[in-house]
Structure formats: structure tokens, C-alpha cells
Length: 207
Image 1: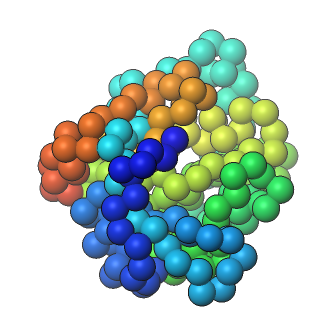
Image 2: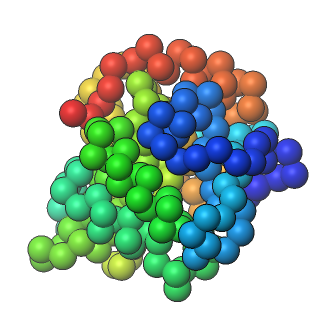
Image 3: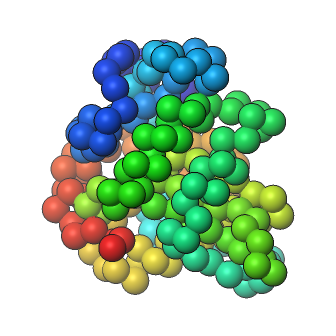
């Protein structure tokens, strides 16, 4: 979770060019105040210890693999709905403001932000979204309405990226106890930024 040295800047805007420049430099935004504030300040974060998932490091138990098969995985068919699920104010630690939603929906329209969705019986029951820059997929948030649906979406993301080949990495911002069970590890800031330079030479995985 956030440390005292993880916040590196305050201010600026959420225009597409600003966001893409930030991701290429290793930063991502989060509101500093109430998520319902229309013109609230944003902080720009670059964790000292970055949570990342190597594509060959995903840990999937036998039971999770079996459960995941019941979901249909789709990509970019319900981006706004995934953001809505992730932004549910009833969730603990809700941080996705209206401004964030608008900014990332515009990034999606421009082809930079993507959703991976888990569907069951024609209903969206989980998913995740993030920003793809070169070989980096910067994961922003995930949600589920059925058990293991968000994990199934993560498996789907890994499989999609693996199928594209090349040097790729999933950034999850911070390692948590839960994410560690799925194979998420930490990189020191300097190592993450070094990897980020290399990743930007990889062709995109989404069209």
C-alpha cells in the first residue's frame, strides 16, 4: 500500500497527453480528496516498491483454473461498465472519481485504455481495466460480482498478452497480500523505471 515516498507530484490535469506522458514516465494519478469533488486535486504516484506481475509468474490454483472456465472472457466490449463496477462507492477504499472515469473513457475511445471482462450467462460479473503503453499494461482497478470473476479476467489478460509475444509486464501499482498469492512481486522504483524504458519498445498488444 502507499508509502510516504510514493507521492511524487500534485496538480496538472487528466488530458490524454498528460496521462500518457505520466505512464511513460512511471507515474499514475489518484484523487487526493473526496472522490466526489468535481475539481479536486490529483496526486501523481510512483511507488518506491512497485507491484508487478510477470506473465510467467501468475499463480493459478487447480480450483481457480476450474472455476475460471465458467466465465466467458471478452476484451473491450464493456469498458464503461467495467469502470462503473470498479468505481462502486460501496467498495472499501473507493477512489475512482467522476473525473477519473471521464478521463479513462476518453483514453479508451482513443485506443489506449482497455478492459478485460468476465461474463456469465450474458451478464458482466467482473473485470479489470488499465492503460497499455508498449509492452506495459498498467492495471488500474478490478471488480467482481461473482466469486473469482476478477481473477478470471486477470488470467484472461495474461493469456492475451502472452499470445502477443514480446517483452511484456503487468503493473498493479502496489503489492497486497491478496495479489501476492496470485504471483505479484515488488520491483524497486529504479528497476521498474529501467524496465519501463525497455517495455516501450514493444509493439502494443491491443488494436
